[in-house]
Every structure is written in structure tokens, then in C-alpha cells.
Length: 150
Image 1: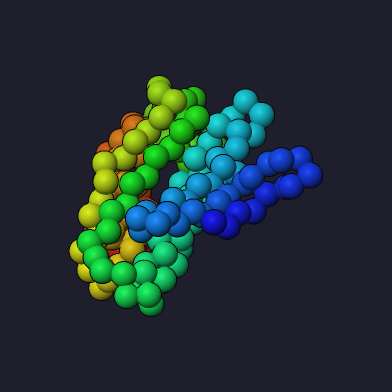
Image 2 (image 1 turned 60 degrees about the horizontal axis):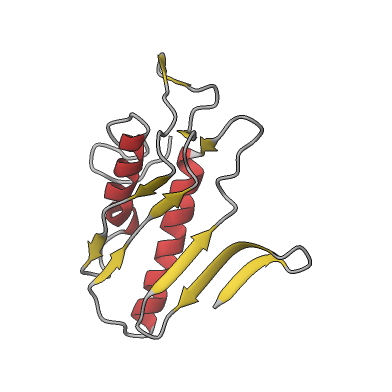
């Protein structure tokens, strides 16, 4: 297990825990912090962080010859009232409704090959989160499903 936090205050911002059965759990308790009354999921930053993290984990899996398949399970907790990437709670001329539940549990994504680009692996998860925010899909992908942040 590794973590980053403030030992003096007993606060943990991030941790990664690898269990004996091969499960890897990574938690980020810092990135989605409310800024005053505004609770914003930064659409590009959080997607980039997840893409980068999964790239590192899959690189390690491949390096240590961990056989696939593997699954990605993404959950956002404490998320009620957040909006996705809208500085003023408006998006393209329409009001953005905040997330109406405290937990968003994204359906698991099965990874069957190390050759798949991580941005494509995570697209269904990002689309699910966008759906909960009233958007049809992540707007950070082009027409060929390549991650191209706006």
C-alpha cells in the first residue's frame, strides 16, 4: 500500500492498495473538492488523471506479466450536487443540473488486451458519468473515439 497525505493531521489524499488476490484499489480523495458553494467535476482534468493512472497500472501489470482480463470499476462517492465542467452551471446555452445522488457507480469495464488505448477503454465510464450530468457523452472525444480534450 502506498499513500499521500498529511500524517500530522491524519488526512489521506490518495492511496493505492494491492491485495493478495490481485485486486488493485486506487482512491483519490482530493481532486473533487468543492470550491465554496460550487461543486465542479473538471471535465478534462479528471479524465486525464484517470487515463494517466490506468496507463501506469496497466504498464505495471504487463511488466509483471499479470494475465488479462482485468476490470476497471469506477465509483464517485460524495458527488451529490456536483456538475461536470460547467464554471457557471450553464453549458451551451442550457442550465446544467447537478448530480442528484451521492454515489455514481459506473458499470465495470473488461480489459482483454494490453494493446487497447487506455482512453478508449475508459470512454464508456466517462460517458456514464456525463449521462448522470445530463450530457449524452464525454465531449473530450473526436468522431473516431480518440481522446481529444477540448
